Image (tube, rainbow, N blue to C red):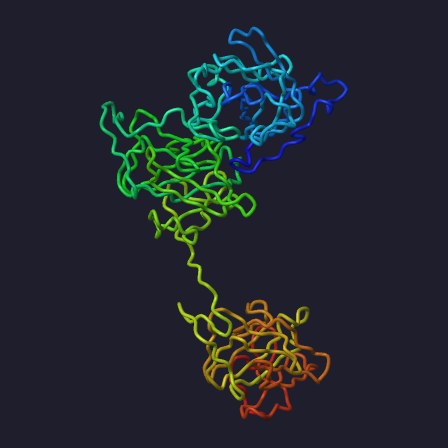
Amino acid sequence: MKHPLRRPALALSSLLALAGACGPDDGPSGGQCDGSILTGDLVITEVMANPAGEDRGNEWFEIYNASSTAIDLAGLTLVYSKPDGSDEKTHSMRELVIEPGDYVVVGGVAPELAPSFVDYGFGNDLGTMRNAGARLALRCGSQIIDEAEYPSVEGDDGVAVGLDGNVAPDHLANDSVDSFCPATVEYAPDSFGSPGESNEPCSIAAPGMCNDGGGMRPTNPPVHGDLIITEFMANPGAVADTAGEWFEIYAVREVDLNGLVAGVLPGEPKMSVNQVDCLTVEAGGYALFAREADPVFNGGLPEVHHTFNFALKNGTTTTGPGSLFIGIGDVVLDEITYSDSNNGASTALDPRQIDPGGNDDEANWCPGEASYGDGDLGTPGAANSECPIVIDPCDEGQCRDGDTCRPVVPPQMGDVLVTEALANPNLSGNDSAHEWFELTILGDFDLNGLQLGRNETVEQTVTDDKCMPVTAGQILVFAGNLDPTMNGGLPQADLRKTFTLNNDNNNRDVSVGHGGTFFHSLRYNGNLVGQSTQLDPDGVTVCPTPATVPYGDGGDLGTPGELNPECP
């Protein structure tokens, strides 16, 4: 169970439920174990057998869910004995749900007195744990789910022992006392361990020697500025987080990664590259680190250079920011923090910002877009795509002209006329797609903020962050649809209108203006079928007879986008 001490807890049911909540067939302290729990589904990962100060009430051990589904531990038997199996004591658990890839901490304390990092108290049912080493087991009915023998912790007061955090917890790995190592990270005063979290690496290799093609040579360790965190997947969509999380680092120069450490908090590494063979990444190359190496299970990742066994926080307003660091020994080479991540998409650094300082700015990161493997998005182990340039909007009253903002140039009285309108097209079935009207521009101004309507009532305002300049002599067509295959074959349609023209009587008009003042209106004959109403080129007279020039593909008559003929 992930704790508030480190990160928010996941769901669990009746955390401090008392023994009295058991069903009628339950044993003295728990329910019937669910037979769907299989050997290896649960793993004992960490043991605190010698707490600082008083042992009674402060001993605990940690259980990891290695399966792919949530498990209710109700009825699971906790077993404690000497290494040879003698003096066995047991406790049957109450209801407690553990999510896949998560941890729970069970402690020898009354449930109501359990500290925040203990998820479940079993009281004194298991007695006092031996400092000289003992056997712990998890049993479902008669089936052993996991068992582990922890080493002697004599003289190590307040120090938990845990499985190597470099690898995923495994029920076979904890069979040997040699698989456990003492913790070095303090989680409470005078207490060392990682209850409810992935463990530290059991050994952190310092840069030294590595095997290069059968011969040993000195490693070429990175220094600050050599390695840059360039991409991470904290919230995969194709597979579970515990298998699909990954991060990527870029090498500025050729280095060996032997001795590299990583984690979420500097000073508390959760991964260490301890292999004997040289793990070299060339200059300009990428190294990929993942929770799972097998592409069958990790979402189809390309070659993974090394695995890690800690969780990448999603980074939301609820959980708080996430973080990640890489280093050598105690030296931090690079670290990032992030406030958000994307479901099913990586978070990728703009390749123009590959720099230890460039990846500190969240504005230089963007979601991955290329599909990989099983369908998640990102470029694991390869160069990222450039992030789109985010441009702040202009201030009110301004528009963007290229890369700069400038004041909008508004039209003045006499700068624009409504010169033609077709409200009742010949094509039946969808008048609104085939209707149009025409504006003739007589001055230089911006269309931004231009107001259009009927009977001097505003029904549409032209808006756009980009400047929309027009010049004297232009003729613009506003149509219900800009596609000539859908609007009756208009020879041109410059802007879409969002209101319809009425065709029920002769008393209708189209108005144009700015800032609440209307400059001009054209009254059109809405009863005309397939013929536009036109304004004489004198800019004053509405032609008493309708248009006679055919256009488009529907048999309609008018001159959209062209100078009107003189009235007969």
